[in-house]
Image (cartoon, rainbow, N blue to C red):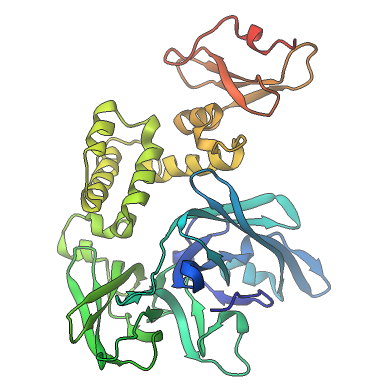
Length: 458
């Protein structure tokens, strides 16, 4: 597998119903493939809405530019592994085009050793650097051994797959196919065909004549709505499999595409799956038609592994009770962890009175804290300022004191609507921009009237 070099761009129109998250409607997906030496080649597929950028008029055209940054770091210590950054120019011919979402889609790949990583995509408006958005995803990379067991790569969901021609866009070409990714994982009336690409490894047994391949789609309630089988002839130790499925007759909702292969001689089974979504304006969602209550299979937890579930629950340390934490620690299977997380947020939504989902609100604050309050190797959500932001939201007012005589930098956050008005005071005691809480007037927080003594310059 070759490393891809980004040189050109594609745009396609988005339905306004399919926007994903944030001002740029960011989407980020990935697939893991085998590489030499036990490492993996991980491809990242991403997209964003270019009409969210600021455009400047140049004659009859409107021009804008985005700074695209993809950062790969190790999750355990936040150490940097790789960075890809480039500027992407965009031109529109008519202001009317700004009223309909238009998505830019791209791909980049990295060779990664077995470990747990976080990939972060950041989009910054070149014409307005204060306008930006980011999204991140956790990736567990495991070693694929050269042994007698058949292995299957991740499934890459695509908007089209064709044989690679001389005119093909090179950055989407691999193994004689041009594969255009769908990082949103959303398919709709305007994109009624689901294309998929994957790779099979360790097919070196001479006695194998073929492999039995089964592709299925299950809905949010675990019901099989589509299934087909075929036999894959073996021609080398590694092969590619591609396919296309008509999904225009599926109802709006969440689905899982499953790909399984069985050795016809030994009955050895290998499996890969990916969740995707259908937006069908002509067919209501499955749960509306059936009256069933949405299950864990319709949530993002459906495809999470144990590490990802543990990480997701770790984010809840500020709002989970001791009993809830103890209960989660006792769980041993990934299925039980998925179910627990789903039920946790389902119960919390029942008592939430905010305008948006409690979960959406909470994790948006996590993301903002990580972007704004990181300190050294400590993630932003684990810092004192990050914790306060996550629990209480943005402050009504901030006083920053950076140049007072004989006192280290500190800042005061004011919340006028909590307990009649409260303050949080954070100080940079070390001089390395690591602001810790010194004092608060909130009845449930740290209280120290002599807080200034902690930040006196010696």
